[in-house]
Length: 257
Image 1 (cartoon, helix red, strand yellow):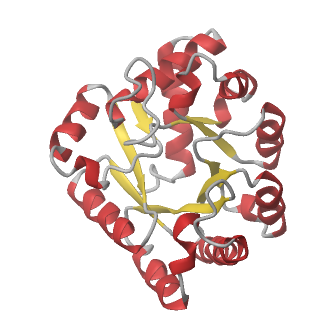
Image 2 (image 1 turned 135 degrees about the horizontal axis):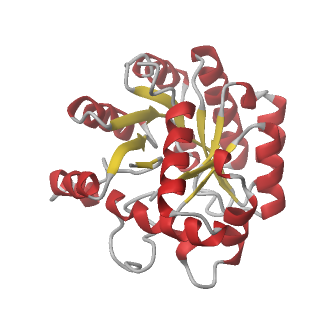
């Protein structure tokens, strides 16, 4: 039983064979998939897919790349969408200083407003953080975001920062890069973070793990991430699968339905 805690199955790259992608995931033991939105359209699609498939859940939010397009009307629409019974988080939200597709000031403004929306709705948040470690940590602390739940999606920071996040109460999710031969940081993080604070994800269709690197990613491949973490921690595949699934179910309050 596996839980892909972050997959963009609403993405256009799945338009031709989405049904088959979902069937392959189920056949590979993936019981649950969290599909986060990155803007209004993808958030709506995530809800539609969650409505259609039992094991698929949705999050709604605006990615930092799209923050420049946000306004108060969109925030109200997100709030309304978040009332859907299968919306389990606000996300993916955060800061991206690598591409700077939206001005940093604008990214921070709408990130904070979405954190506050999540707190108002008693929902956890799914975080995108790229090259913005200091501002990210400062905002999450100042906004007391950890009270409602924080998931550091596709974590790419240092082992030391991951340990600080765990101390603050956050969960760390690892994706395909943990399987890459020369990716030292995610492997160190996998070893350091206790299993009760880890999740696994594909971030599909991106970041395809070995041995399928170079192809389109999909939820069925989350098994490779699970297997790599099991090897790094010297525990069984089943142990990692069970623990990460239980962590995700607890974080997203799936047993409380």
